[in-house]
Length: 522
Image 1 (cartoon, rainbow, N blue to C red):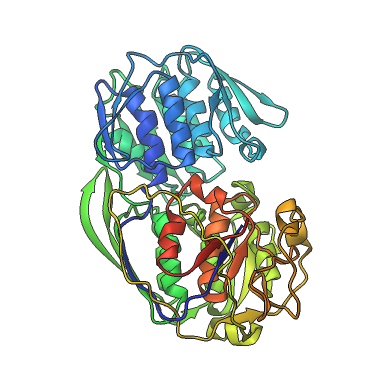
Image 2: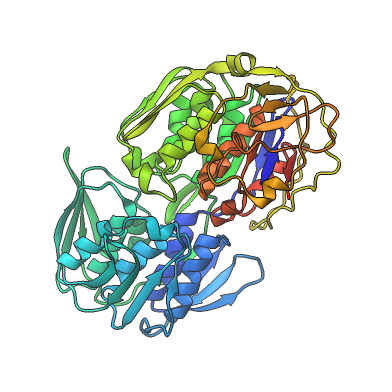
């Protein structure tokens, strides 16, 4: 459980330690298995999801040699993918499970893919059924849930039109098509993220795209030889960088410069939304190898409401963070056509709305999105009181996760000159759920207390009490936890679980601590 203190003045930061891109890291480990010689991969993301992907690749025959810098590797491929003698553990990584299912369905051997309880609750039929239609032999729990058993065999070419806008489904089918008997065609009604096609083409695969008004069509030719090796420095993850773009956008008199970020057009849509809302956003391209890379500058400005219903697959991961921006915008913002949010690491629509209701924000949960009534810069004035001072010297300082980037940042910490403020207490049954833990029972009670973004303080108290009815919940989802941590820069926040953040962004809290106080409650 962590507490985030609100800042007291504008933020002005240059950040060059954003976590390496998760999507690119996953694919580097997998695709190196298909190369004809060793790949050199620098700045690989050392987070739980991508480490699971790498461990699976090793079980399939990839030899991994560390270079001098952390996250730098030589990936030496096997002569052929080998059958493992144990279960392939994907952890929380849906990308790993879905892409490996496609790849392994065409390899000789028997493979079992498993994961944690959250991954076991995510739908896999969207990958299983199209693969089975081309001859794949895949078994699952009832309803198409993991664990999955894959018996590799020769596959047929296909002509498949997906009704689901999913880069993971597309990637699984492309990987299977590389080993099919005949050429294949994959069509999608919305152009989804295209890292798989870009990287495989860069390695020598024959993959082309045709687009019409109705469909985006990909033609895949089966491999006749192994792929060329990778030689890549993985850029910063734009989905991770977006959290600190959000921090600058919602904090008055603030700006951030985000260094060496992946600028793939399908990955920066959330920055464009933020710009449409009024924030100042600039891009500075620095290089282009496999993918476009550069710096992103974001500066605060008054935000206005927006309605989003298109290009959802390009911003599906950033929608929880955008929901926070909506709260500080003037007017009513709405997200539609985003039902995919319900089958991510958690039901992200429900998670966002239940936490916002706990904070007193007027909002509504829809089947395929949500509506948020933004209050602009009146948010604090409408929901707040002056905060009493807190002596928190007895609270343990959060032990930060290890920085996975080679560059250290040491910038002056700036704080918000506004008065700290406290939100009115609201009733939230959702947030009360599963929070009456021994951990909470150990926290001493205080009296004459007031609520601040899920926190209760007392002027005479030397500790902080967590009220189990208003603590913000991560729902075990890294993006929910990080989104509300950034909101804490304005309102202050307590979040029930910080450990899930390490799934994708191990040094997130380290960067956040350069901006404000972040503490751990035992």
